[in-house]
Each structure stands twice: as structure tokens, then as C-alpha cells.
Length: 408
Ligand code: DI6
Ligand code: FE
Image 1 (cartoon, rainbow, N blue to C red):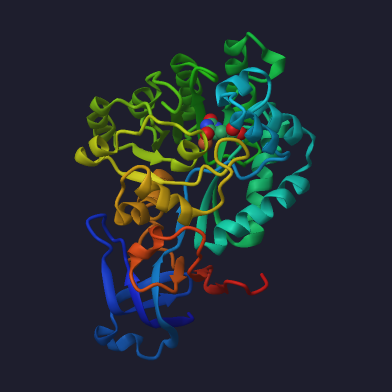
Image 2 (cartoon, protein in one colour; image 1 turned 120 degrees about the horizontal axis):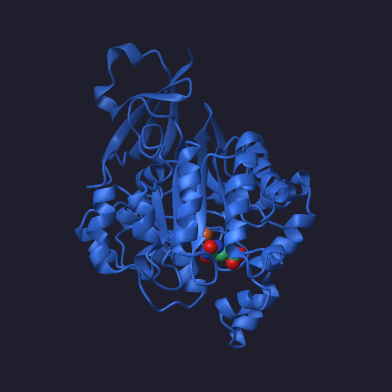
């Protein structure tokens, strides 16, 4: 099998979350698509001395970034709503008036799989230009069986064509569609008994999510969705305590959720419960920033109790029209007081845990997939430091380099 030794580089291994695991004058041996060895170049074992040398010019190598919470596939445009919020309407008021998520739903229902993939392609390219090699993409703008399936088909096709690792998440319980106005329980039954099994049958679902919120679904409704998902053998994750406290995070963690996401209104005394359940807290400072939220997630309590904290873009047309993981890392530090190490871990090893894929991706260790981002940086703290400057030189995935700026 083809073997290469990447050398003349610093490596931030992120093998655990206590430090960057920085190796100066490091080397990484790649066999096919897997990492075979990592260490100081001076210690390269004799059996790898005939591997093809690849000189990386003294740059910094990190695990490929993992964006573990996105709504990347959608049609339509919500810039007008951005203006309305600036004129004084709240996100929840716009949603209640039939705008917000429902406005994206109307456009998404009209779009074919090809059209959805075409619209999402430049968004995925923006993420990849900043080092993303794995992404989670949710449905949730179809809110009817076939439109939800089309969204997930588009997500899969888009990522397959780009060579990006993808987790597809069924988010049928994202908002109440107009066909079920005032009948939320009936819609939840439809999600559980028709939409979810059909999407699973179509082979497009890797996980199930729900929006547990006053403007969306209650804790008992989300519990029904998750119990159905578990009965189909699917992992669950939850949009919880974003705009208010309902207790969705604790309920989800109790059902073994991979992650609970947003969490601005999580109570500090719930952190031990998340820690015990092993749920990852996925923090989304982009939505916090765009919605001009003032309630901070209880980061200190999460840290103190050892709850793994991931970061993600939440890329979506409403609350987080942000396609820059580096900007999100900066926001994690500036707005949420995370450290640059927590921010990088949040986009690598902790994000891998949030997807249930930590045995395969998220750190540079022998046996894991060889999926890297290469940076013109001297130190990993630089990745959280700037806004609007992209030092990514390229990504390595599927056994090959994609240099930034080179045609795909
Ligand atoms: N919370 C969010 O921030 C996104 N979905 C959700 O449940 C927003 C989706 C949108 O506004 O289109
Ligand atoms: Fe979201």
C-alpha cells in the first residue's frame, strides 16, 4: 500500500483535551487513508524510511476540522428578516408570524435534490476552505416526508461528490408545519410513525435531532421522537435551552443523547448530570451573536464538571448565516470565554465525540483516519485569534491533498 511520510511540520495531535499535543519537527506516516505513525521526525522507525517523503514547509498540521452542527442544505434567503430584526422584531416574533424557519420551508419544499445540492455547494466549499473535512447536516426545512428525504439525499450527494465525511441528521421535529397548525401532537405522531421510518428506509439517516423550545416542541413531544429513534437504533441529539429553559437537555441526556446543543439557558446545576450521562455540550456562539442573545451558556460549570464542549457553526439561513469555523472559534473565545485550546478541541476531538465518531476522527493518532488541515501558522492559538484571515493551506482526506485555491 502507498505510504507517505509528512515531515517538516509541527503537529497538533489533540490526542486528549489537556493540551494541543504539539510536536515540533514532527512527522506523520500515512498508509493509504489511515494514520500509521506519529512522532518526532528524528524518531521515525526504520520500517517507514522508504515511505514517500512529503515536505510540508514548516507549517502546522491539525486534525481536519469537524463542523458537528449545521443546517447547510436549504433554499431561499432570509436577508429581509435580518432587516426586520434590526427594526425591532424578535426571532420568536418573526417565527410566530410565519416567517423564520417556515419561510425557508416554503422555498425548500419547491427545490429538487439537485437544486438543493447546487445551492449548498458554495457553502460547503467555504467551510472546506477553512479546514473542514467532516460535517453534520440536518434536514428540518422540509417538514413533510419527501422534502425531508430530499434534503438528506442532497446532503449525502453533495458531500460524496466533494469527498467530505458527512453525518446526516433527521430533524423532522424542527418546527410545526402549517398543515398541522394547533395539532403539534398529531405532527409528532406523523414524524414518529411515517416520516422518520420512511427516511430510515430511504437510507439517508445517521442520527435524529429535535428542537425543544417554546416556539417548537415540548419535552414530552421530543421524548417521543427520541424514543422512536432509539427503537430504530439511531443516536439522538437535541436543540435545547436555546431561547428559554424547558429541560430538554436533561431529558435528552437521560436518553443517552450524543450531544445537547445551544444551551444558553441551561442551568449551571445541570452540568453534573450532562457529565454523568456523557453528553457533549455543543456550543453555537454564531446564533448567540446573530440573535444578540445576552444569556451566556454556563461554560464555567460545564468546564468544572468535565462536560466535553464542542463548537460548531450552526450554519443556517436564519439564526447563524455563518460559514466560517475560524470566526466561530474566535467567538467561542471572545463571547463565551473558551480558551483557544478548547476552541480547537471543540472543532476536532470534542466534535468527533458529538458525532459518535471519536474512534475514527478528531485527533492525529495511529489507527485513525488520515484527515488533516494544514495551516500557515506558527502556533495553534492563532486559529482562534483572527477574524477574516484564512491561513488554511489545504486539507488532506481520502489519501490526497486539496490545496486551497486549486480547482477541485
Ligand atoms: N435553532 C437554530 O438556531 C436553528 N434551528 C434551530 O432549531 C435556526 C434555523 C433557522 O432559523 O432557520
Ligand atoms: Fe441548529
